[in-house]
Image (cartoon, rainbow, N blue to C red; front, side, top):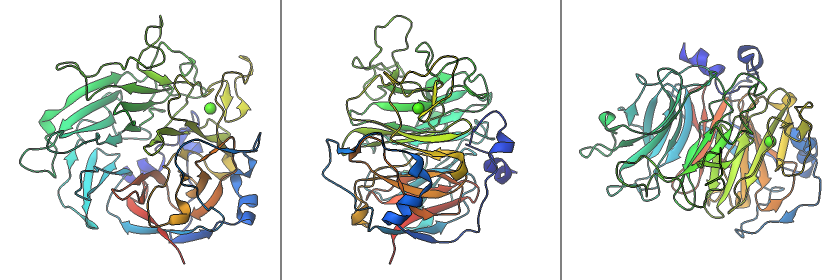
Length: 426
Ligand SMILES: [Ca+2]
């Protein structure tokens, strides 16, 4: 049953989830694609018209060579039902942690799935459609001196919980289920659009992605309402908060002190930023914001940017959605890439590649789509809109793109219950 539920997970392409989110899965196979200028011209995202010539952005010197890169997506493990996120602890152990939507977190060590879960929270979470265990994050400096792990899940009532669990002092491969420390909760008015990603920024602050609350078309206009944390990226201090306080609000957050605004908010105007990442080499925040009925988008907030309005519900991608409200572009941060629903249904934001195995890919931002399984790349060092190129057709229901301790790329397939990795091809 979970596999069936997983197939309609995540998407949130509108109120009619079951009807709109059914993926057209092609037979699974290792796939590779040649990224050439021709491929770029015919790529689905060629519709992301560049409004101005792209210019190099400040930051890392890594620049990808997308015209020559060759990659393949290789299945590594299955037996991970509802696999929804993969990440490293960056504690030198080389372990990879795979979170499942059903509430279980598994450990992969040296290519082997450990038989006992890191933690099983299935009795605390409501796992169906877009709900369940959605995010997992290890803090900077994670280890014996800082043994807490952070999770983002839908609780028994379907409401959002962000919580911390402590590693079992007697077993580094287990979390102590009795150690739960609730950081933040949010009532969910509808079952869909719960966001999901959590992660730490370059300052050690915890970022939390929350969707607009759900239904379709953001009926209560929450994404633009600074009085609610729905439809936002939040930024809170969980590592430096005073004892007994779950978090504090960083003084440099953009809406601190504004009457009627929640101080936790970093960015707003988001519909369902299900998968996001911070590029720790530059400090840039990359957001995959799932669209309504027509357009999927990728957004970026460069290092130091705060208080950005990403436009939802007035804008869906670069297209006016709420005509009654009017669509004035001023003050809105438009996507760096978009693609129509002919080419997918739910964007899966990924990461900027900083690994060594595929040198031509360094400095590329990778992302995918839950329905089509296409893997695309952008040059993360360019400002302005880009037409991404197709790297591979995975034939999978991709639910996340994460990295291991070496910065190499791992993907999860939620319907197939599989862990995949990106490797160089011929
Ligand atoms: Ca937007």
